[in-house]
Image 1 (tube, rainbow, N blue to C red):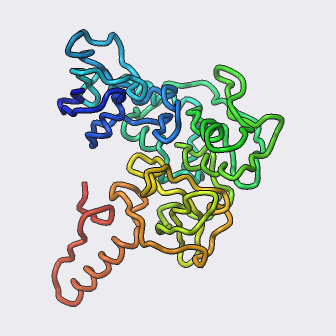
Image 2: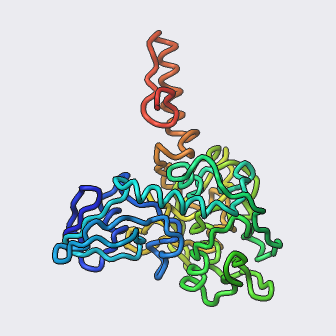
Image 3: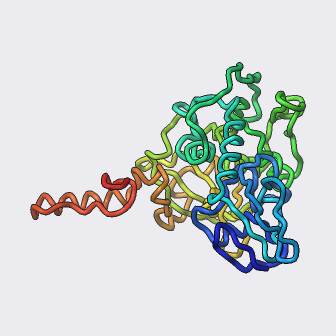
Length: 340
């Protein structure tokens, strides 16, 4: 099936969604997604940030769809023509969605452990507006304890449902879900049950905001002050392929590896790289792991600011400049002061 997205045409198999087709093309035309997660079944369709305009339904029926549609839930038809970043209507509608998501979200980025790798920060910066029209009090929730490893900040939650689907699909039994309705809906546990199952830590990795954070990493460091390293170990519960976040010689936290879209990366055998709580919370010594090498960090990520590969390169160039009296070439990336 041929589909054209922002004037770029690609041939995709039947059953492919518009969002999946856009990811096959890659680049700026890929719609943002806050609730869709390719590794979780039935995810998507909640946040509406991935909306696009279908300019032509198909070659057989060229009529446009009457309103923007969620690209994560809309299947491609042969001859479909889609507009994303080339449609002012879509960009304005997406800005409205972002404004809605931020209505109740607290401005506590300076103290939030998710800062620096928060999808909502990126979404607000790239698709949001400078000011809000909201003048009412933000919603508040009573703090609840959901266990020793995960901290729940319900005021930051955007109800993407990812954590609920992790519990449904990766664990033996689910102890939490969405309670109540409307503007008082919240993620909570049944009768204050603690979430203790072996794969529950994956809820931290899938949360796109700072609603679910790692208690063992809480307030220890900003993510851009750490150095990510890929490592693995033999584990009977999970794939054992992780990312270690070092500060000096200390491992501050352990996470699953992520792909370009912030989702858990696939293992070499094609399976999703979910990790167990033992690997995540209990194995925080270098001797527990086989170190593979530095993790690849996108140069546009704030994490690359202090990434040691760039730092070593920069230090070498500066030393060369001092010795030889020539201008240092800092190269590409976040450390280059000439980047616009």
